[in-house]
Length: 308
Length: 326
Ligand SMILES: Nc1ncnc2c1ncn2[C@@H]1O[C@H](COP(=O)(O)OP(=O)(O)O)[C@@H](O)[C@H]1O
Ligand SMILES: [Mg+2]
Image (cartoon, rainbow over all chains, first blue to last red; front, side, top):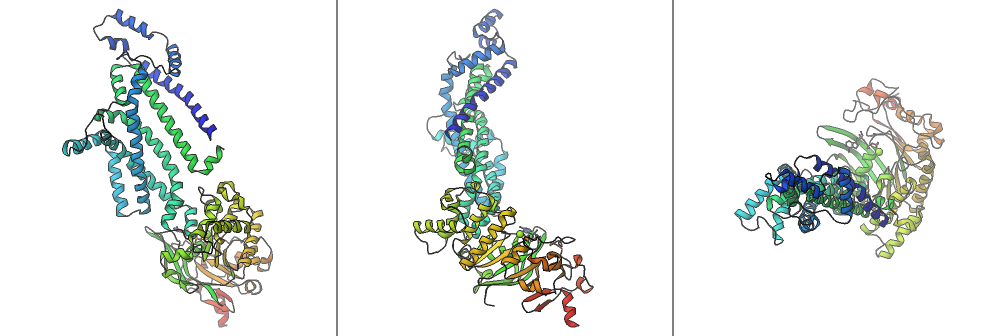
């Protein structure tokens, strides 16, 4: 098992190098010169050229890429064009907010989606199941930012019970987390329902029934563990979407996370910051995926056996 | 016949949106204490459906018993509620399913699955230690090393899995064992092993058995009675001798068994018969076998046959009604 985890951690390296290469190339072909942006439109061409020289921007792409890679492994992500501060510190300061947001959102969506999905499957075609289905459909089809604004209007402006933005206390997270979690909870609910219904049709469920097991026992002991595996995978997929979603949600709620860092950096064409933020997100995503794979192995003895 | 299980005029349908599958159409069968009844018939004849009806585990929503009665040791099965049925399932009537590969839960150990029945039911094994030793005992009985109970199903071969399934079914010493083609999914070499083991256990534990099978060798070897099922009906029933000695057989049985004297020929499989089973959503008028029957008469196309009885032997065919009249 440890070997497996170690192997998976090592896999992250080449993938990361590839991601960096892709982002690096894309940023290079987009129009707009960072030095020109930093110095403003009125600065003389000479000043711009000097700055380009100083930042090493006139070196060939491959050389810059390799230099950058070497830096990344020393946790040196360069200097922000905007603030002139080391990028690493800037990102590190904003990262916890995003992680908290995404982790809370995943947990919330799982805690809502999985139990309700199981309930929906067990009481399929009932009034409850149908109302879940309809709500899930509505939630999944409205845009995230709109949901955020609506929640903000109701809970902060109308009812005044929750803060509308910024950070400070845990209550600041409630609305953004809900905004992110509700649509994915809807998705997970539908997913769990389908998978659970499929599981309940399996032969071993019939075997359990023939043994005299009660419906509750069949659901919790026989079906849930089997159904949880594919649900876990979809949770992982969902997390990727959530990470992307933080970009917008942070902007809506004025949260100082990675998303707002990226937004600001993009406006400024602050390449080192965009790069670093992307790398952080990629690593985070890969670690989560690894975590899910490990959980998989713990639930499914067949997979566990492969890593013995 | 002092009967343990009596099925009377049982009718079962599967109902989906706008089609009705008439799977079981008026079955009468009984099974005495310690008897083995072999049930044979082509795929789709309704054998599994009948077995599931006895335990009342037909697919929810779609499967419905629409007529008849099932009596088990004085209990009207069809009138019992779920709680009462749960006390019977696995404790007094057990079932072994066709495919051991899918019948076991992949996320629970073999031991956990074998002990489940013992824990669920009110057995003589109360304490943890007693349950554990019972699991060991029953695993040993089916030829599995008790130390392997910590293994998961995927670590077992098909034959071993079916042994586990059998152990599960026997754990509470049921009075009736329903085995639905217990060896069909296994290698030919293992089939004989598993079957002779089941036969031994049945004797040892004094159970009654309803054995659904395709294997005529098996029927010849271990069944006291044989019932032939076609399109949801029992078209011939009798002791093994009735089938072997008697010459008055249903044309379907004749086709199925080939030349009857060869029935002793071990591992003989059912003969394929020309034509297909009738569509259960649109069964033919008269005798359900008449479209495939080589001896079909005019009356067969319009009137369902009566049952011709001769001692223990029963045949549902117009051929013999006519002979009776003559
Ligand atoms: N869940 C179901 N829904 C609809 N039809 C079914 C279902 N299960 C079985 N049937 C139909 O009922 C008939 C009898 O099936 P079954 O009892 O499985 O036969 P056997 O076990 O003899 O092969 C077949 O025509 C089959 O297609
Ligand atoms: Mg069957």
